[in-house]
Length: 467
Ligand SMILES: Cc1cc2nc3c(=O)[nH]c(=O)nc-3n(C[C@H](O)[C@H](O)[C@H](O)COP(=O)(O)OP(=O)(O)OC[C@H]3O[C@@H](n4cnc5c(N)ncnc54)[C@H](O)[C@@H]3O)c2cc1C
Ligand code: FES
Ligand code: FES
Image (cartoon, rainbow, N blue to C red; front, side, top):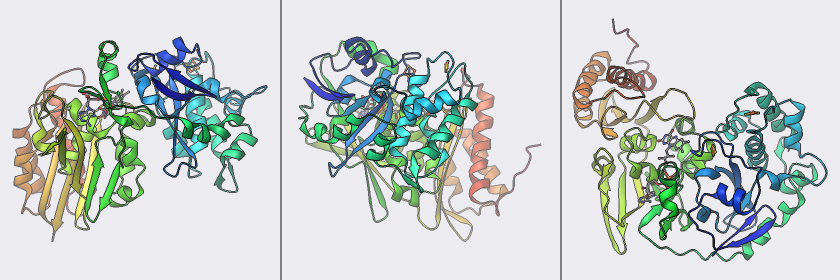
């Protein structure tokens, strides 16, 4: 049995928990407003809102997900809002009205996804900030209207869902026709839901953003799955100079953590390069490691942060350095039934600097052709410590052991950088595939490592043409 609220109704169902949420919404509940286009999390047509009780249980916090790659099980104890759940009785809500006024819909297939994503922004935004609104709709693709009209509608909403610089309260959003009246009773109704979640099965599902793209059909046939995101845990803990991240933490948990942002400059800019807000809301850091894609962005970032993993099975646990976790193409140091409970790393200090670079065919909503991250500590212009990773140029996300060893003790200047790149070229072995030729990827890796140094040490390293 699984229990949750869908729009204004409490749902109790014994349906197969591993079916996708969108199939449950459309086929089981006959709510056809949520559309299916790609079934891979790429287009946003199936966007729904997910509300969870805040820690103090006084309010509900909402985020968006793509329901085509989310298991029904992950809805347990939550408030799921489809486009129908935002309708008012006799008129358009403010989001629908803004889209209409801006002529922002033609065939209308993408429109429910945009309505849900924009309404979610209006419920959540903390700053009078167009960037936040653009993040909110970053995973929604429109194939016929063009984005100018949609962005005009979005900008109008940024202005309209605030009063005297402050975001509207829930009551004000209801009063001003952004959301229907029933939202006022959701937090009380969520408190009544008894979560019957049990940890069962060896096969772990976290956000599902990899698993449901690759194996949605076979998951339907697997009876016992461990839906790990339903377990409890604080996502990010910072104590002294060490940051611990739970095995359940999503990319958004990092994105939203103010202290982490203070300690890692430009963190949000780096994380914004990972897919869209709706995917980041589901995608876990641990899932990115276990997927073991050679171009996983979290893998590249946490290799450069020299993270350590805590791997558990029942009462047993062991520690593994992330740089030792990747063994060969899609082979990792994780035995059957084991899970990543947490990871930790030392935060950058006053003398150390972190940077992440990624090149993909599209800047946003695309996986990398090549990515790389660096964490480098410097004293008197000399390298004291260095961790450097690169993805897309080997069978695994690559920690550049020899290049790091070479850099330690060296003065930072153009010659050192040139020699370091020569060492790196002996460590990588790119292959040609759909994302680019081997030569192109090697060139990218070279240029992106240069970019680290030019960005972090503009006074010590100058850009030089390769000619
Ligand atoms: C549209 C789209 C865009 C994407 N863009 C990017 C991108 O730009 N960059 C990028 O790097 N990735 C991208 N991804 C990939 C994906 O989002 C990440 O790999 C994500 O971090 C996987 O996490 P998850 O929680 O969804 O994993 P799931 O799909 O739930 O699981 C993935 C694997 O990890 C295992 N697992 C999960 N958690 C644990 C744990 N705690 N312990 C042990 N095993 C575990 C599962 O059993 C499974 O084998 C994208 C995916 C989609 C659908
Ligand atoms: S159908 Fe395209 S993201 Fe879900
Ligand atoms: S209105 Fe047709 S896809 Fe957006």
